[in-house]
Length: 254
Image 1 (cartoon, rainbow, N blue to C red):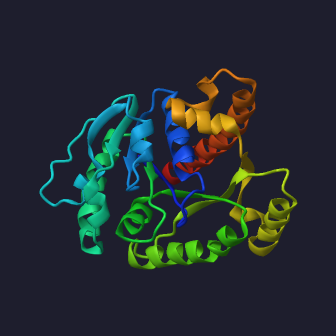
Image 2 (cartoon, helix red, strand yellow; image 1 turned 60 degrees about the vertical axis):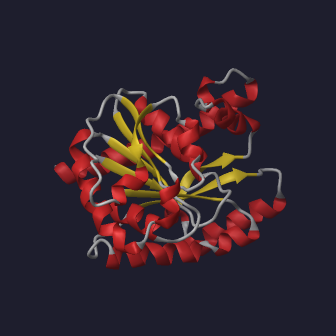
Image 3 (cartoon, helix red, strand yellow; image 1 turned 180 degrees about the horizontal axis):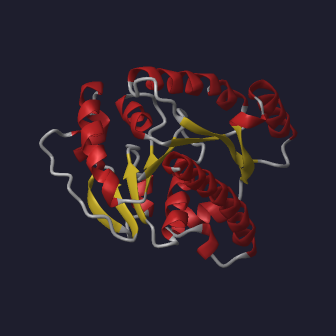
């Protein structure tokens, strides 16, 4: 199972929108996709409510919980419940053990994370194979990039025994292409961290994405001219994600 974590320690950057679209995209080829909603807001659980439901994601952190599950083609959801808000760092080792038992049953796992740093983000990064971080190009959002990178280093040292996280990069999200300020911020960010840290492509602010989340369906399933443009943009990004994940997996087994 290849685990892809969508993380940015700031709200309102489009994490859930990207996470659910990634799950839909991966499931198109009849892959067995596990979606784990660790975000207490539960928007991912709501959007994917029509998919196969297993048990609450908080069960992963409970030592006595039964988490056995057989993967099936399509999306299986571990949904949000109120216990997520009281998860503590002491419960992370339990999550790591439970999560390991799921590996043989799924091809991919997509984890949506909360906007604030804590035990759930630590656990998600500890089990992830790939990390993708959507980021808005507002002034204060960019300031959080350093904090994110520091968190990655901390989890690699304290939660992964030095094993590096495969960081796919930062992807500009909800980008206003008509804003000179945001274009300037994008140029400044690339200059600061380099092109290797930036994921190719941007997710532009479009009504089609909002409609997709409201309708609980992928943007490429919506019939409108605006959604068509958004669909092409999103599928290009998701296709690159899958390409990199598959290439890394093949390299490991070669």
